[in-house]
Image (cartoon, rainbow, N blue to C red; front, top):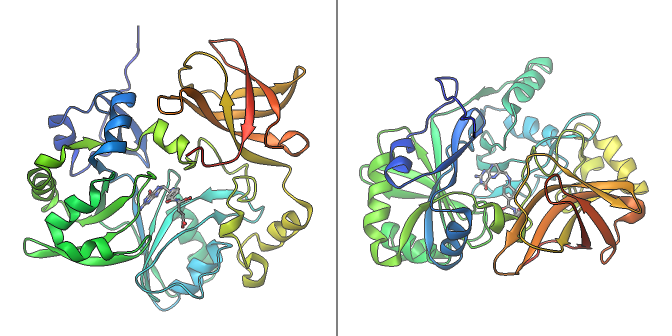
Length: 369
Ligand code: THG
């Protein structure tokens, strides 16, 4: 028997929950204490559709933390080793956020509206408490709160076509990780070119609940002959694309260098962010382990909530944290942390699955596609 997950008021619904149901959602997870769809038809069918057409995703669980006030820019820079000095008011940045040990607290997308108004679009951890604590401890002049904003992603190769029909041709000129305002009915929304797939697309930051269902319906009306469907972040597609999931592929136990996010940490020491000295040392000495892709042999493997040990001659050298069968690559692909002594791309390792025995695997770089 499969036990069910009981949902109560503590698990927040979203402004799109009824729409997901109407469009056949068949699996959910909980993310930032909010519902996040994981499956509609099947993970494989959803995957093929995402790579060919266009999908509308309820990613309301990517909650925003709004930071406003004269000290906002200074506070945000304290959070991250990524240098924000050149960030423009219409940019989004992917930001590693670390503690004093260099451990990852979250990996949000940050939306800069102006020097004194930011949204931090968080992954699954209680980052607002950390930020409020810092601001309190340093007596900074800022307001920090979770606004009523629910991101709706439009992802897939036909996302340009759908967004152009909705908001006018000029929207296709929006560059990667830039944002602008678009009009809808008698309101306007921030739209960015971003999203948790590598198929291309947009994220609409829907403010309030009043316009959520009308916006959803308008997208489906406009996308009818584009074969638009309701969808969600897809496990297979995001592994192929090398997109990491906080809490799965990296946790507080990992540094940004271990997670392969070193390219987002330039200037860490110079900017004196929290954890800068630890990260500087790690940059000099190299991390003790690092994320790798794994090509795992044999028949399709199910995904597992428990990491699979990676071994060489019986000795543990790492663990697989996400895995799936890729229909397009016709192999099992995975993401895992591997110790420095064994992390060379091309190395042969063994993956000890829980239910399907030991499989040979080869380490590779990311992304897969
Ligand atoms: N969109 C928004 N908020 C989010 C996510 C999102 N918050 C939670 C979670 N997803 C954060 N994680 C990621 C991980 C990767 C990317 C975005 C969010 C991503 N990475 C690209 C890459 O690694 O190739 C590009 C990064 C860059 O060049 O800046 O897009 O999806 N709003």
